[in-house]
Amino acid sequence: MDLKQEEMDFKILRNDLLEVIEDFRRGLKNYNEKRNELHPDAIIAHKNYQNLFYKINKIFTKLEIKMIENPLGKSFNPKYHDCVSLSRDHNLEDDMISSVISAGWTQRGIVIKPAAVIVNKKQ
Image 1 (cartoon, rainbow, N blue to C red):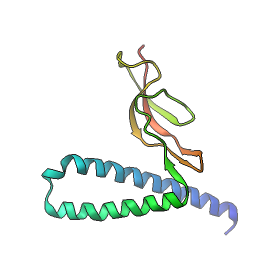
Image 2: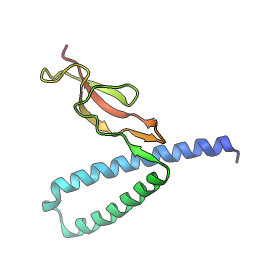
Image 3: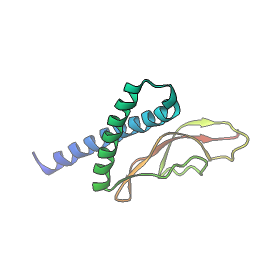
């Protein structure tokens, strides 16, 4: 296998892992919101998922992959954000991020996945 193919394979793997970690983050958030309603077996399974989540994060740390700071309520920046929809909230300024669909990621300071966001437009 040549170096170019290895680089392409790594990018595919990295991007797929980013999707997996996003799913884990959403799952952990949902778990924390409904923890008191869950069966004890679900709580045990949750601990196993948490361990897997931490292992993936450890790999990301080794690869210098970092989550972009949560942009909610900040100005839209096309370098770090991908606008997937618009909102019309008169309480927010134009070009302010009103919702975050998925986190953005960098590797060694380079954006590898922009945050998917909803941007406010008053008109």
